[in-house]
Length: 125
Picture 1 (cartoon, rainbow, N blue to C red):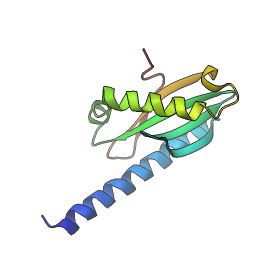
Picture 2: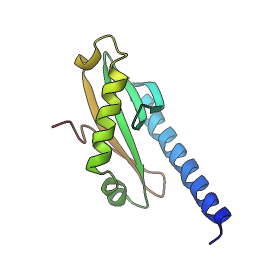
Picture 3: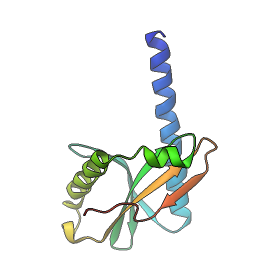
Picture 4: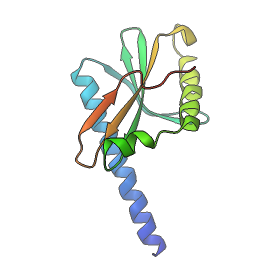
């Protein structure tokens, strides 16, 4: 495989991920949540979506794969830890800081573009 094929594949995966995030953001907006930020980058990680739920926040990790099971399996403990740290960094700019009510969701997207949102999918233990 040539480098240009690898670059093409990586580019396609990137755009596929962006499209999945956009669909998930629209789903949350239809349910009345406001998008506070998309693809927010902290010092050590990126948070795909940050939504406002009244005074609270929902941090969403979007996972896309052929099916929901593969998408769910792709979220590692290390990645969750990085998301917690990035969320804490984001919260430092909020009026209530780390006292803000938060939730961590995972949005699964399959190859057909169908979504499954798991609310409170993980939480800092």
